[in-house]
Image (cartoon, rainbow over all chains, first blue to last red; front, side):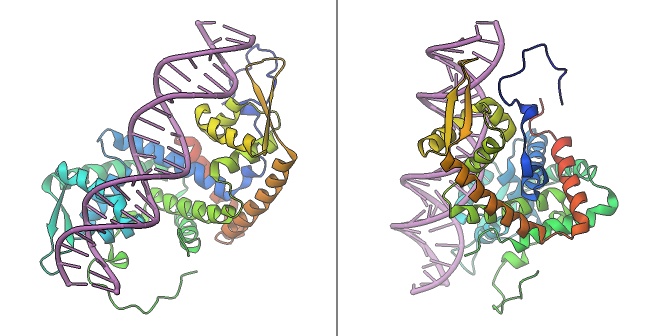
Length: 164
Length: 164
DNA sequence: TATTGTTATACTCTATAACTATA
DNA sequence: TATAGTTATAGAGTATAACAATA
């Protein structure tokens, strides 16, 4: 953390280690962000070996769990606009992870399912995710886990992502 | 805490409420992300009235707390590359929030301080942030707070944002 | 008229690499 | 050579608006 003070003259201004964070030090929002960034970076690194990124990952898992889901519903579940999904799905279809089948009942809709290749990817990704979760779990005393999750859920539900 | 279920008719296909999240439901990483997004969105909305965004906010607060800090040190404290700061600081200097003064001792460096206008903005932003923190605090039982922060810190420090 | 999905476009945030000016 | 800061550029990731097909 603090490298042995090198024999430089005292740095003229505030150096990394010297930076005062002030009330940031005790701010929930600040630490929430830090933790999320760290978790996300670690996850990206782990999953990066599979050449699938965050949006793709969420889509695969959610389609796997909800075969036949429409794009609009998927977008809502991911908290993203439908237009943001188009390129992701296009890519996943092109790479044969996902199948799109037009609905006969309502020909505006496309039902999304995983191809068998996609299902393989799914279980591989779930293995990554499980490892990642184990890594996170190591930061939490087992008896605190439930309450920790509860608080996160409360924050997510009380402060609506997009209110008006 | 939980908004009263609105009286809508049951939707046709896998709609938001129907979507199965699977193990996501119990995943720390997932809820961490959700909570952070909600917190960030709420904060942005609150601070949006002041026409200052996240990067600007962090810079102002950190400069306020560390007058004379250099750009490189500020970047490290924010976890961002120095080049990412250039446009932010340029904007803050142009709008007279921040003053840059070249160091006499080392003429490569610039010491950053808040102008008096910047200091006003600082206290106004801190008021916003304090309200935001109060909103977050309402999601946490007081006796859980310390442990909650501890866990977040552990996650942030154990999973390094950029390892190799 | 309303909804599903696409296209076109633009904006934010960020990083990498090459540059300059100093050291 | 190494460091502080800038510039140029690129790439994720996202949203808005207008559109075609369908309801």
